[in-house]
Structures are given as C-alpha cells and as structure tokens.
Image (cartoon, rainbow, N blue to C red):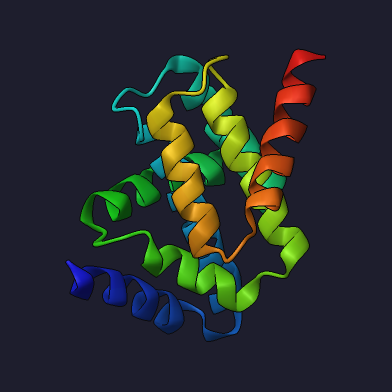
Length: 151
C-alpha cells in the first residue's frame, strides 16, 4: 500500500517536474476532503455535491478537473496507509493561513448535510493534529463554518 502512495508522488514528478507541488498538493487536499466525507461511512448527496465546489474554491481548478481529482483521491484514500502521507506533504508546502482555510473546507464538507457526525468531528480533529494546528484553531474554524452555515 505504501508503495502505491510513493508511486503516486513519483508519477506526478515524472509527468511534470515543474508543477509537482501544485498537483501533489491538490491531490492531498482532495484526499483529505474525501476522507472527511467518508468518515461516517455514508456519503450524502449534499457531501457529494459540496466536494467539487470546495475543491474548486481551494485549487482554482475547473469543476470537471475537480470531479476527476476527487475520483483519483477516492482511489488513493482506498489504498492509503494513513492520513500522514497527505498531511506530511501539506505541512511542507502550506503556510498557517492555508492550513486554516483547508480546515474550514473540511468542516464545510462535514456540515454540508447540516449534521456533524461524531466520526467526521474525530476525523477533522485528527487531520488538525497532523497539520500541527492548535485546539483553539480547530475550534475557531469549526465555529466560523457553523456561523456561516446558520446565516
């Protein structure tokens, strides 16, 4: 399994060494969004619709490119050993404000069906920890998205 993940990054480098950061980063972001959507073992229609929109906002890709990226991410998530392989890359390339923006996107996926499942909360907490974010930042992002959803 670990070999498939390493091959994934190597394949990205071989295809376009100049744009490795962008594409690998986009895949990691997509994988984390997919992980949150799968955390409660049921992907609702709202979550399914929210994923491409949130990914488009975060990456600047077209909707079709995001749909393809999500399908790739789903396959990678199925073969992933842990979240660490995705968060490690993000830790190398993201600044704090980008990590916080990503965390808000993760909360948006969880809230897209107007309900935060305890498994989704736990998954986002785990990702937040792996991104080396403080608990106060975790809560700030959660409340920011909750307040946005309710208005």
